[in-house]
Length: 499
Image (tube, rainbow, N blue to C red; front, side, top):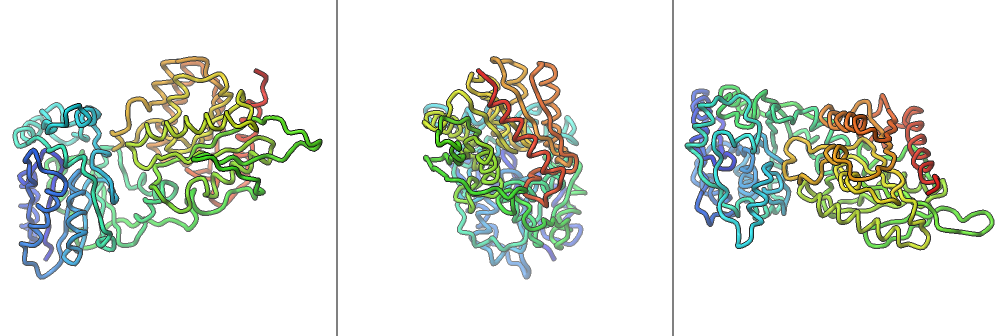
């Protein structure tokens, strides 16, 4: 017999699970909904203790299934970390993958909440949503007007420190099996998760563990209200260890594998977050300042990951390839560790640009920026106010609008909006587009190319029809080699144009 502990997201309490609890109990399972403390002084630690107390109070012949919806995955993981011997499975119900040190605020989609919690004099409780405001916290598809009104009547303000206090994990529950239930109306699908596992940040690769199973529900963010029957059925299947498993071939990561060219190592100069890979001197011995390409790695990438992005095969490969063709190949290691870090990351890139331009071996008037994947959002700054020395802006399989669940990304980082606003004379754009891109990412690229056409931006597209996200570190093909060669030589040609 399964025994479920059900913990819901912000503003809601145990009553939101009423219909699901009934279905689970009818099936013979035990179900215990949790009402987390709503005292203004409560913090994440308070909520972890709420769950731990319930775990300790239950006498069960088997192991518990802890279900965390939205924010509640934080206290659920905290409780599992303290009582791993009691927990048989952790279920992420339309929830993220917080790590040790993460605060729940990073995944809050409503930007007004971020402003509220940064208010002078200290933040107060986050007001509970009215019926028309729930959509700021997730997709409301499947909810009737009556159900939205009911949610608001049952809601309570969210204590601010529950969102800002970092989650602390000792790692004792790392081996507990887990399940992910994705509510697809919000945009997240198993297909997108699989793409992130295959070519995204390294922390996603743990989702390919055989102990992890996935389910989809074709509804919005509150399935316990919009489809309680379906949710109860999926929870029972998750408890039984069912679910779709993800597989990832070895080496399919920009931080692993091999670059598609065998690029010779060049002298590397490290200056803080910036690495410069230097070209060979001219045959006659003269060595004037050279143009430079600054490669900006994708992300988010967790801090202290090994290998670091600038030491990974993908970015080493590009920088060395550029250096072999006579320009300085530079790589910046910026601090895009989570989706709330884009402003910090933008500062790191701007600082690296200034260091690069100040280097006497670099021609400060001829610089290209080349961004990858999740760093695509950083291009908004350079599109909004393009400096005269920026000769080219290159983008490889970029993410050009925040993905589902990326509500913590500030409005500043919207490349399409910046393109349409037109802040100056835009440099040429070189876009490498993967034909097998994940649909959600591909849609952001399509929107960007449409805006470029509307604004008559100089955009050259290099298509890789059989390439997927991060195709350069997969098994090389003539198509992929040709695409990279063309992209690099196109960028270098723009650098050689006279002022």
